[in-house]
Length: 83
Image 1: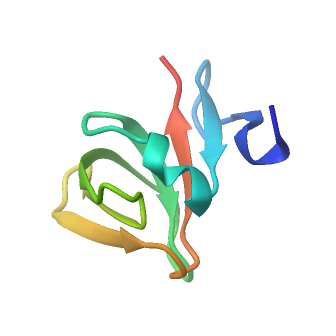
Image 2 (image 1 turned 60 degrees about the vertical axis):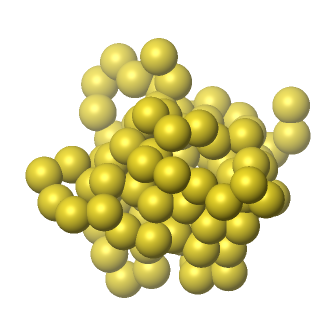
């Protein structure tokens, strides 16, 4: 396991997350629960809606809000919420 996929505590009790570097986004799947941290924005919880076959970008439906596009190189940090 490399440092980009180490389990870490999430911002809520009892849950763990695994950080996904943009090179590992190809391993995300529609329906995965994630926390995204975009530059100059607070962390947001959401669900992967769709992603590019090469993992270079994906759509995430932010809880209680609309769908947003996350793309490689935009500075977003992504943590997948583990079951």
